[in-house]
Image (cartoon, rainbow, N blue to C red):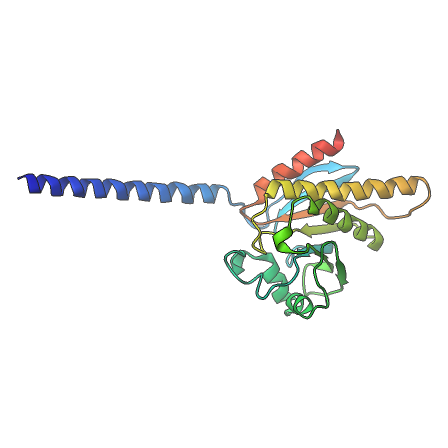
Length: 246
């Protein structure tokens, strides 16, 4: 009798524990689904100095723009393909960009033609129809083990200065940190990029007012984010916009 009662108690406890696990999986899956934004979603987070700041759930290969900016670390073997820590290939914008460029991104990094040192740049003119951007600007992020979110302020400034030099009406920006396997603070990084962009723009505007610079105004900046990071990135972008305007 006691043995039967003990067996029933153990079975009941096991069933209860299984139910808890299933419930937890359900809740986690539901939360993930709710926090994932559909590819192609676009939202203007705000405007600064007449420039619209648009967020788009898209990869750097597919986004249509006058100039596509993508960020890469110093090369380590298979870095963007090793998942984890890199995002899976289906969700990895750098992998898609490399594939659509026929392996050029990997080749130029692996060969040492572009080392990816912090703030290093190289401008590429892809054949028409290769990617959505008319031109591709790679900006180096340096050693992945020494990355700090503050670096992205300078990177944002570089992106804007290059855009003004080229005279483009718009440019899209992909930090590609998650693609490279860096668990960075999404909102802070996005906000820092915006801060850097407008630090550079306002400096050039100041010079223009003194007849020391000429440029065509940029109408729109497109900030790219993955499906799981769009909302969080938007929060950081809006905070940065508010800070810049104050």
